[in-house]
Length: 175
Ligand SMILES: CC(C)(COP(=O)(O)OP(=O)(O)OC[C@H]1O[C@@H](n2cnc3c(N)ncnc32)[C@H](O)[C@@H]1OP(=O)(O)O)[C@@H](O)C(=O)NCCC(=O)NCCS
Image (cartoon, rainbow, N blue to C red; front, side, top):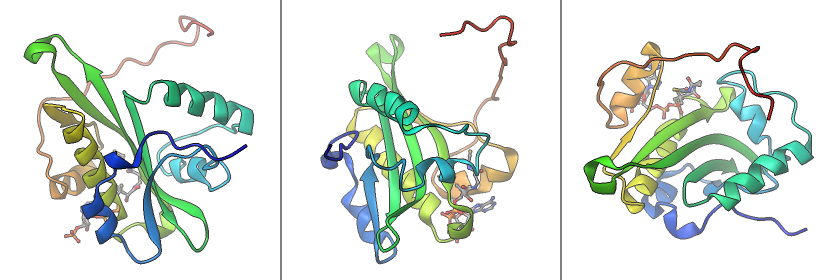
């Protein structure tokens, strides 16, 4: 089966592509990124789980059907044909701000061996571009205290507090 992209290239910032190190490409998530180590890159964030290709494709196909809301991007090292950085912007529709749109940045991850080369910054710039292109009035994210300086360098400022409720296992529906 031929490879599928999550969304169209017009949403990928040409400025960000131009600033990447040689041999690196900014792309929408692709159906064969399972083989390119996308999930391995996410392991810098948290436990990912051992997906089979089928389980990966189930999630990819869901995102594809909702690709007006989910925009996951990658930076690949073309020589090795491997994903080295990734991130997502999720576009939420609200009633406030006259049916306003808010972009939520999620799951920013740079391969452990590739950190400190501005790939994280490029991912954030590319996601901000998508948020602006899709008409969001703001783009927000949650992060740990240690990453605050990184996001400040990416043009964000600290606001409010993050709150979380982890659903107890016995309460959680098995879907
Ligand atoms: C945090 C992370 C995404 C940053 O990506 P990166 O590619 O390593 O960072 P960059 O090279 O793009 O950094 C851009 C700038 O931010 C600075 N920076 C990056 N991380 C920083 C930190 N934790 N504290 C202070 N400054 C930081 C860099 O020094 C650089 O500054 P400069 O422009 O003055 O040189 C990456 O290190 C990572 O994946 N970490 C593990 C997972 C994680 O914490 N993800 C974020 C979840 S909210």
